[in-house]
Image (tube, rainbow, N blue to C red; front, side, top):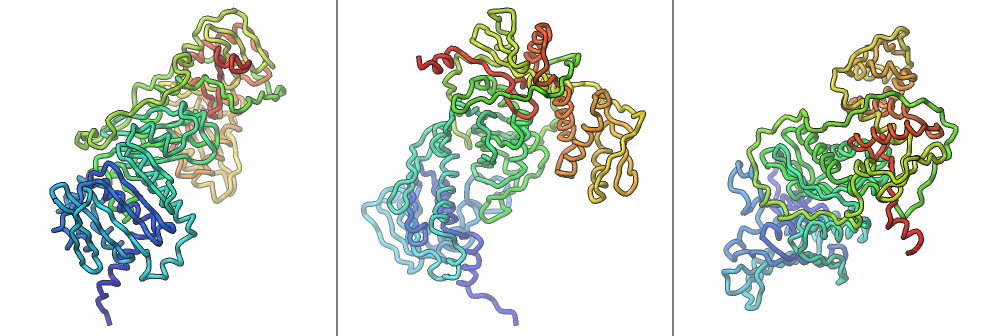
Length: 591
């Protein structure tokens, strides 16, 4: 027999989707406060939210007439019709939060609007309403005894410390993208967060506890009706674990596509295995995405994934191109710089490359057809630039390379490092790293189509049977390659790109490329594979540590490096050069 469920069971089932843990309640109620126009929000927690959660704001308040519908399912003031879902400007809209919270806890409400002479107390469980003579404009919601009527739910919660950490993370995320709102957050009457309304830079430093704020680069760009604001970290403060803080239309999201776009935006500026710091708040017209994917709104879908990916990647790279030069050359004083002792590396003569500067003025992105959006209503009025404490004395790397030398002769230390004085102090270059980046950018910026070069002696390479089909499929799509199946465990390479055939280790480069294909399979785009191949070629072809360069070769290398786009970092993201200025020397001698 099919039975209709009682209302209380329906509400508890629905609550299970919205109220996963105490942090879910904090998120929903704080977002309601933001939608109410609050400029100050206070959060108080007892026992990780199980005993009590209090959210107090100075927003617009709730009228007494709305009490009757306030805690009903799908009761909302945010939307009226289905079309409204395509033009959302509020944090909440489902009308499920308060009914779900009320179904699994004991709720009390105190509120007052500007137009009311008195405030009101309301208990949705008993329908009790009382006038309060002295009440401030705004709303205070008190949530007590969470899951008191569904004790089984408590078994799935973690320790109080873990649950509190989830609450703290939620508050930090919301506070981060709302710098114009003051937040006070307490647990067990102990203050954990107290931030006043401020600019975005101050809020970023205060919430994310950025230790090296001078290495933050201001992100404030727009393209194709997609706007991105926030701060990205200079490659120098990259770490071995992800440091992403991603928001879309002021909502924190879990979005691997954006993470990947940011990582690729840094490209060769990161050391292998390192991730950049990135606080990126993206604003996209609501017609171009769907936030109605999950009750907690932590996942979104885009109408055009490729456009979003390419645009964010471009905006990150554009910011680095404009700002990274200002901070790249300051030597780190917090850790010693190790000197390579690999003096027995294979010594190659420097290649005679026709160096030319990288031109990033054109791109192949397709313009979005969405209508223009006024982002001023969503974004802070001003995105302050991080204050680099050596900004005035550190010109960009091209100026440093082109600066007049005090002495014409160059010191060549350990046949690896080029050292010379200039008008800014002492410049030190790693010959292999600099030459590697020069070669890479020369290869990447060849304008002519990729030419295929047939091999006089085709190369047979062993490939596991399970990986053979995907390897052939991907290689065949790369310009210049001709590849065929060659038995049960081999493939045969009959032609390669012409630039690859000119290197001394063609087979080694191909094997490296195949290893990358097998590692990442179809998730790696062809453009990525091409760049990885060029990186390998550049690394293998560059002059090595231990090669004794002549004065004329050093001069030619410096001139070529000055024409590169991101010459301050090699293919693997390591520094290529360091400028030691007067300030650095005085610090060493405690002056």
